[in-house]
Length: 204
Image (cartoon, rainbow, N blue to C red):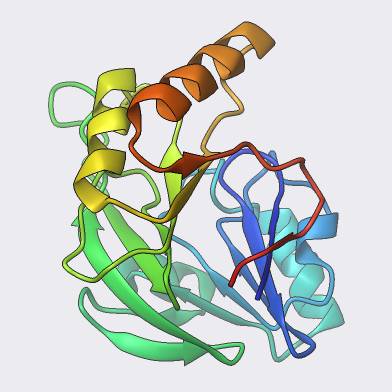
Protein backbone atom coordinates (compact mmCIF):
# COMPACT_ATOMS: atom_id res chain seq x y z
CA UNK A 1 0.00 0.00 0.00
CA UNK A 2 1.29 3.44 -0.96
CA UNK A 3 0.49 6.49 1.15
CA UNK A 4 0.94 10.00 -0.16
CA UNK A 5 0.47 13.07 2.03
CA UNK A 6 -1.02 16.20 0.51
CA UNK A 7 -1.79 19.52 2.14
CA UNK A 8 -2.95 19.67 5.74
CA UNK A 9 -5.14 16.68 6.70
CA UNK A 10 -5.22 14.81 3.38
CA UNK A 11 -3.62 11.47 2.57
CA UNK A 12 -4.08 9.29 -0.49
CA UNK A 13 -3.84 5.49 -0.38
CA UNK A 14 -3.15 3.40 -3.50
CA UNK A 15 -3.01 -0.33 -4.16
CA UNK A 16 -3.58 -2.44 -7.28
CA UNK A 17 -4.70 0.58 -9.28
CA UNK A 18 -7.32 1.62 -6.70
CA UNK A 19 -7.29 5.01 -4.98
CA UNK A 20 -8.78 5.97 -1.61
CA UNK A 21 -8.50 9.60 -0.45
CA UNK A 22 -8.97 10.74 3.15
CA UNK A 23 -9.98 14.30 4.07
CA UNK A 24 -9.12 16.19 0.86
CA UNK A 25 -9.88 19.70 2.08
CA UNK A 26 -9.33 23.13 0.60
CA UNK A 27 -5.60 23.09 1.41
CA UNK A 28 -4.99 19.78 -0.37
CA UNK A 29 -4.89 20.71 -4.06
CA UNK A 30 -6.14 19.02 -7.21
CA UNK A 31 -3.60 16.19 -7.38
CA UNK A 32 -5.00 14.44 -4.32
CA UNK A 33 -8.29 13.84 -6.16
CA UNK A 34 -6.84 12.43 -9.40
CA UNK A 35 -8.26 8.99 -10.17
CA UNK A 36 -10.01 8.68 -6.80
CA UNK A 37 -12.37 5.70 -6.50
CA UNK A 38 -13.63 6.58 -3.02
CA UNK A 39 -13.28 9.30 -0.40
CA UNK A 40 -13.43 9.15 3.41
CA UNK A 41 -14.47 12.37 5.13
CA UNK A 42 -14.06 12.65 8.89
CA UNK A 43 -16.27 15.75 9.17
CA UNK A 44 -17.59 18.82 7.37
CA UNK A 45 -15.00 21.54 8.00
CA UNK A 46 -13.51 23.09 4.87
CA UNK A 47 -9.97 22.02 5.71
CA UNK A 48 -11.24 18.42 5.42
CA UNK A 49 -13.63 18.60 2.46
CA UNK A 50 -13.46 20.83 -0.62
CA UNK A 51 -16.94 20.98 -2.13
CA UNK A 52 -15.85 22.46 -5.47
CA UNK A 53 -13.18 19.84 -6.04
CA UNK A 54 -15.58 17.12 -4.92
CA UNK A 55 -18.08 18.24 -7.56
CA UNK A 56 -15.33 18.28 -10.20
CA UNK A 57 -14.15 14.79 -9.20
CA UNK A 58 -17.71 13.45 -9.45
CA UNK A 59 -18.07 14.98 -12.90
CA UNK A 60 -15.01 13.02 -14.00
CA UNK A 61 -16.02 9.85 -12.12
CA UNK A 62 -19.77 9.61 -11.41
CA UNK A 63 -19.09 6.38 -9.52
CA UNK A 64 -16.96 8.13 -6.89
CA UNK A 65 -18.24 7.06 -3.45
CA UNK A 66 -18.07 9.45 -0.49
CA UNK A 67 -18.20 7.81 2.94
CA UNK A 68 -18.87 10.01 5.97
CA UNK A 69 -21.06 10.49 9.04
CA UNK A 70 -24.85 10.47 8.42
CA UNK A 71 -25.52 14.24 8.58
CA UNK A 72 -22.79 15.08 6.09
CA UNK A 73 -23.64 12.10 3.90
CA UNK A 74 -27.21 13.39 3.58
CA UNK A 75 -25.91 16.83 2.60
CA UNK A 76 -23.42 15.53 0.04
CA UNK A 77 -25.34 12.56 -1.31
CA UNK A 78 -22.76 10.21 0.11
CA UNK A 79 -22.83 6.91 1.96
CA UNK A 80 -23.64 7.20 5.66
CA UNK A 81 -21.22 5.50 8.03
CA UNK A 82 -21.96 4.62 11.66
CA UNK A 83 -19.44 4.56 14.49
CA UNK A 84 -18.08 1.03 14.81
CA UNK A 85 -19.07 0.07 11.27
CA UNK A 86 -16.70 -1.95 9.09
CA UNK A 87 -16.94 -1.57 5.33
CA UNK A 88 -14.93 -1.59 2.11
CA UNK A 89 -13.86 1.52 0.22
CA UNK A 90 -11.91 1.35 -3.05
CA UNK A 91 -10.88 -2.20 -2.15
CA UNK A 92 -9.56 -1.23 1.29
CA UNK A 93 -10.99 -2.61 4.54
CA UNK A 94 -12.13 0.31 6.73
CA UNK A 95 -13.51 0.64 10.24
CA UNK A 96 -15.05 3.87 11.57
CA UNK A 97 -14.32 4.86 15.17
CA UNK A 98 -14.67 7.81 17.52
CA UNK A 99 -17.68 9.95 16.71
CA UNK A 100 -17.03 13.44 18.09
CA UNK A 101 -14.82 16.39 17.14
CA UNK A 102 -12.35 17.40 19.85
CA UNK A 103 -13.52 20.40 21.86
CA UNK A 104 -11.93 23.76 21.12
CA UNK A 105 -13.65 25.92 23.75
CA UNK A 106 -17.12 26.15 25.35
CA UNK A 107 -18.29 22.94 23.70
CA UNK A 108 -17.41 24.17 20.22
CA UNK A 109 -17.43 23.04 17.47
CA UNK A 110 -19.77 20.31 18.71
CA UNK A 111 -19.95 18.38 15.44
CA UNK A 112 -19.55 14.70 14.53
CA UNK A 113 -16.11 13.38 13.59
CA UNK A 114 -15.28 9.88 12.45
CA UNK A 115 -11.81 8.41 12.67
CA UNK A 116 -10.90 5.75 10.11
CA UNK A 117 -8.79 2.63 10.51
CA UNK A 118 -7.66 1.49 7.07
CA UNK A 119 -5.74 -1.79 7.23
CA UNK A 120 -3.43 -0.71 10.04
CA UNK A 121 -3.40 3.02 9.22
CA UNK A 122 -5.35 5.37 11.49
CA UNK A 123 -6.62 8.83 10.53
CA UNK A 124 -8.36 10.32 13.59
CA UNK A 125 -9.69 13.44 11.86
CA UNK A 126 -10.05 16.24 14.39
CA UNK A 127 -9.84 14.11 17.51
CA UNK A 128 -7.50 12.29 19.83
CA UNK A 129 -9.74 9.22 20.05
CA UNK A 130 -7.76 6.07 20.91
CA UNK A 131 -9.23 2.97 19.23
CA UNK A 132 -9.10 -0.51 20.69
CA UNK A 133 -7.65 -1.95 17.49
CA UNK A 134 -3.87 -2.10 16.97
CA UNK A 135 -2.43 0.66 14.78
CA UNK A 136 0.65 0.25 12.62
CA UNK A 137 0.68 3.73 11.06
CA UNK A 138 -0.68 6.72 12.96
CA UNK A 139 -1.51 10.06 11.36
CA UNK A 140 -1.09 12.40 14.32
CA UNK A 141 -2.67 15.89 14.28
CA UNK A 142 -0.03 18.59 14.68
CA UNK A 143 -1.91 21.88 14.87
CA UNK A 144 -5.28 23.55 15.16
CA UNK A 145 -7.35 25.45 17.74
CA UNK A 146 -8.15 22.14 19.47
CA UNK A 147 -4.59 20.72 19.43
CA UNK A 148 -2.05 20.90 22.25
CA UNK A 149 1.46 19.57 21.68
CA UNK A 150 1.51 17.52 24.88
CA UNK A 151 -1.80 15.90 23.90
CA UNK A 152 -0.39 14.93 20.51
CA UNK A 153 2.56 13.27 22.24
CA UNK A 154 0.33 11.49 24.77
CA UNK A 155 -2.05 10.40 22.00
CA UNK A 156 0.84 8.85 20.07
CA UNK A 157 2.11 7.07 23.18
CA UNK A 158 -1.36 5.78 24.05
CA UNK A 159 -1.76 4.19 20.62
CA UNK A 160 1.79 2.88 20.38
CA UNK A 161 2.04 2.61 16.59
CA UNK A 162 5.01 1.20 14.69
CA UNK A 163 5.34 4.55 12.91
CA UNK A 164 3.72 7.98 12.91
CA UNK A 165 3.37 10.79 10.38
CA UNK A 166 2.02 14.30 11.01
CA UNK A 167 -1.21 15.66 9.54
CA UNK A 168 -3.37 18.73 10.21
CA UNK A 169 -0.32 20.98 10.07
CA UNK A 170 -1.12 23.80 7.60
CA UNK A 171 -1.43 26.29 10.47
CA UNK A 172 2.22 25.91 11.50
CA UNK A 173 5.18 27.98 10.35
CA UNK A 174 8.45 26.32 9.35
CA UNK A 175 9.69 26.85 12.90
CA UNK A 176 6.48 25.36 14.29
CA UNK A 177 6.80 22.30 12.07
CA UNK A 178 10.38 21.75 13.18
CA UNK A 179 9.38 22.11 16.83
CA UNK A 180 6.52 19.62 16.53
CA UNK A 181 8.71 17.13 14.68
CA UNK A 182 11.45 17.39 17.28
CA UNK A 183 9.07 16.70 20.17
CA UNK A 184 7.35 13.75 18.45
CA UNK A 185 10.69 12.26 17.45
CA UNK A 186 12.02 12.68 21.01
CA UNK A 187 9.00 11.78 23.11
CA UNK A 188 6.49 10.01 20.86
CA UNK A 189 7.85 6.54 21.50
CA UNK A 190 7.61 5.50 17.85
CA UNK A 191 9.39 5.81 14.52
CA UNK A 192 8.35 9.32 13.52
CA UNK A 193 8.94 11.06 10.18
CA UNK A 194 7.54 13.92 8.11
CA UNK A 195 6.83 12.68 4.57
CA UNK A 196 7.49 14.99 1.65
CA UNK A 197 4.26 16.33 0.20
CA UNK A 198 3.20 14.52 -2.94
CA UNK A 199 5.83 11.77 -2.61
CA UNK A 200 4.49 8.22 -2.01
CA UNK A 201 5.62 6.23 1.02
CA UNK A 202 5.47 2.43 0.95
CA UNK A 203 3.64 0.99 3.96
CA UNK A 204 4.32 -2.68 4.71
